[in-house]
Every structure is written in structure tokens, then in C-alpha cells.
Image 1 (cartoon, chains in turn orange, green):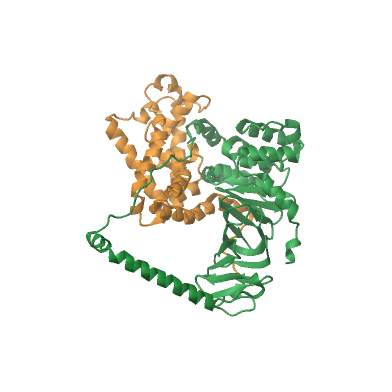
Image 2: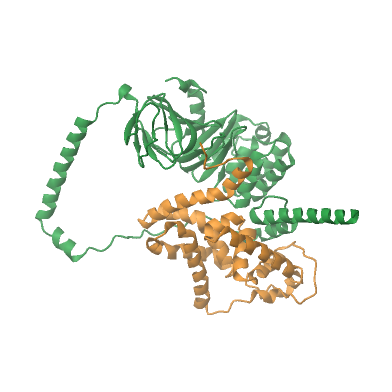
Length: 212
Length: 376
């Protein structure tokens, strides 16, 4: 009898990292349907599963100190609207859109211009050896990631900051695995170039102007 | 020519290295990329620290009553008439059921209902039908597109996914046991902990008051994911306790793997998978262990507690230190005792993790023996 699953060591790893996510979609749909009936416990489960993704999306756009509060705001926005979600398997991408929109609203509300991240990361400066050793430098690395094109920025933050794998990012955000892979690869290449061109040397002067 | 061969060899090596680095960037496996690892460590401080949901307000989704509904329900006779109809219907249904249902042979049969009946789904010795009884010693399997529900006596319910085969081994008072040969079952049990047991080719799953999903492949490997309560997973002296929100793999050769919370990062889960599948004492296993320790959150004390008894005495010290930092051992638990795997102290620490009282498991161990249940 042909099996639908193969739990060889390699495939089992894949299962744990990716197919478990695919499996999660089944139970996600269950939780979404329950949430659509007003079950706040089910919505809490969805929070546990997607808060990390939402956190990463927001971290690419708003100040770090604001992110935790905004994560909750994203879910509070989603709760009364979850009943409008027809395709329950699209919960992740739907939630990601709410998070991105909230980040935009955040700036409209605050009437402030976000610091251009690339101001802290000048590629024209002389190359410097990439070195990561202090919190200030970590903040500058984050700024450099934020200066990347949006698709690369979001994917890299989910991978490098939130610790999600590529397959997991794809499963959660609704992007295709191929797109995520390309974004990771190209984004990482651009980040390496930026980091190799003088960004970390600005740590002392840029602390006051970064949006971290 | 030699120079060109060396050049190709170098290029091939570079290609391999690049492929390994890409794999690490993609899913945290393969040859670690030192630069990416440094970035991960530096950026860790920005990671989401709390995944605990806030208290969400209750949303009333009920639509407002329309004028016609109010008009009908405001008539005092309508509710009375409806109540009379419902009462009559209830009596009729009860009468029909009492006349049509005969007691199952032997009294311990489990009722099986196919939710998507197909011609080749049947009891071993029976003919295809939508409802049937399953007796001790019988097997049941679903085909590629069939699903089925099984009432576990009066203590719970199983949902079988397609391509699932199970056997009913025991259905006595206080003891229900099946063997899952392959496929996927969703289990919901409301009996006291320890009453329902599932044998798999690579481990025994013991319900400790919960709902869970268990998948078993032809080769005996599988995955258990707990939705509610917790489950004990046991084989060859390996025990894994899997609380709600966690999962654990099981391997035909080595039994239950390390349990982990499914909201852990992909890198953490990937490291657990590598640890489980690597040989004891191998460099791969050691590397995976280091990643597990580094990325563990307080909640991942679940994984570290299990790790204590699965590493060498030398490595155990590092695990002890990390787990102690995340969840201090309770009073009466000593470092020396944990390092020599003192059962009482380990159990005490487990209870301090607050995932479930391990006394339930120990009680089950005392009251059940390995293959006792093969006999009814």
C-alpha cells in the first residue's frame, strides 16, 4: 500500500519543520472556524501560533519598543473581522496584511516620518570588517536589514530575528516557498554587501537617529 | 590538465559549501554559516519574547433579530406549540432508538461509523456498511478517501484519517487498548488518565486526560501532537511526556524522540530532529544539543528535562545548568541527584515544570505491564 508520508530521518526533519506547519493549517482552520463562532480560546491559540510572524513583520517597520504593543493591536483588530475571512486556510496571509496596514496606520497616527534606515547604513563609506559584538551593533544590523527592499526585509527578519525557517515563513505568510527562498538568498546577499561597507562603524553616531 | 582538474575540484568544493550555506539560511540545517550564526545571535535580543495571548474580549457575532422573527416569537402561542412539537419528537426518537438498537455482542464492541464510506472500507471479516461494531481482536482500516469515527466504548472517540489501520486489543472496564499499525487518528478521551492506550510499532501512547493526534508510517516512525491535556509516550525505557501544544516524533529504532512545543522556532525544532536522528556520541548530535540549549526558552524546559536522560554524563552537566537557569529545580532536588538521574528528583523537577502530575504516569506504569493487554 502506497504511503502518503515518509518518515525517513531526512524527511522526518522536514516534517517537523515544514509539514508540521502544513499540518498546522488543518488545525489552524479548526481554530479559525471556532474563533469565527466567538471562541476566544481558539483565537488565543492562533495568537500563540502567529504572534512571532506578526512581531517580525512589525519589527521591519516600526520602532522596536512599540512592537510588542502593536502585536496585540493587530490581533485585536483581527478578532472582530475574523468572521469575514472566507478561506480559513489563508488566515496567516490575512493576518500579515493586517499587520502591514497597522504599521502604516501607526505612522499616520504619530505623524512622524520614520527614520530612513539606510541613513544608518551608508554603502559609500569605506569597507570595514563585519563584526558583531555589542547591542549597539545589533541595532545597526537591524537598521541595515530595514533598509533592504520590503520583500527581503520582512523575510530576513523572520529568519534571522524570529528564528523561523524558510518553509515555516512560507507556511505562515502564505508566500510560496520559492519566493521565500529567493528573498532570503538575495536579501542576505544585499545585507552582506551593506554590512561589508561601513555600517557598523557608525554605531556611536547613529544611536540617536536610528528607529530601534 | 592537472591544474584544471584541481580548479574544478575547488569549484566543486566551493559549490558544495555554498549549497550548505544556502541550506542553513533556508532551514537552519546543513553546514552552519558562521556569519549568519553571528547575525542570529546578535539579533536575538529583538526576538518576540512573549507569545502569551492577552485576554481577548468576547465578540457577540449573533446577528440581530429581524422584524419577522420578532413578530413570530412575540406570539405567545408559538413558543408553546414549538415546545410541544419538540417534546413529541424527543419521545419518538427515544422510542425508535430503544427498539432498533440491540446490545453489541459481548457487550464490549465499539461502534464504527464511516463518514465517507467506500467499498473497500470494512471490518476484517465483514462487508462494507456505514455503521458496524468492532470487537476485540478485529482490525479496521480506511481506504484512500474514507474517514471513520469510532466510539471508544463510553470513554471517548477516535477519528480515523484515510489509509489508517488499527486493531482493537482490549476493551475491558478501566482498560481500553488499540494498536495503530499505520495512518492517522485523532483521539479524544474523557476517561480517567491511563485508561486508553495506543500501541504503535515504535512506542506506546498513554492518554493522560487529553486530545491528541497520532500519525504512524509503514516503517514504524511517527509523530504525536497533543491538543489538550498530556500524553505519555514510551518505548525501550525511553519516556516522553507531551503536554498540550507540544509534539514528539517516534522512531522505529530508538523510540520516542524529544518533545517540543510547536511554537518554538524552526531552528529549535530542526535541532531536535537532528538530535533525535543522530547516533549517540556523534558530532551531529552534540552540535544539535548545543543549538537546543542555546535557543531554549523557559517553556522549552519541557525539552531540556527530557534531554537530561538522553545525553552522556558529561553533556548532562550543561543541560542541567541551562535547565536550572530557565526553571530552578525545586527544594529537595540536588545537582548530584539529577546528574545521576535520580528518579524521584527528576519526577519532582518535572512536576515543577507544571505540565502535569507525573504521578499519573507512575501509577499507569505500576498498573499496566508491557503486553498484558494483548489478552482481554
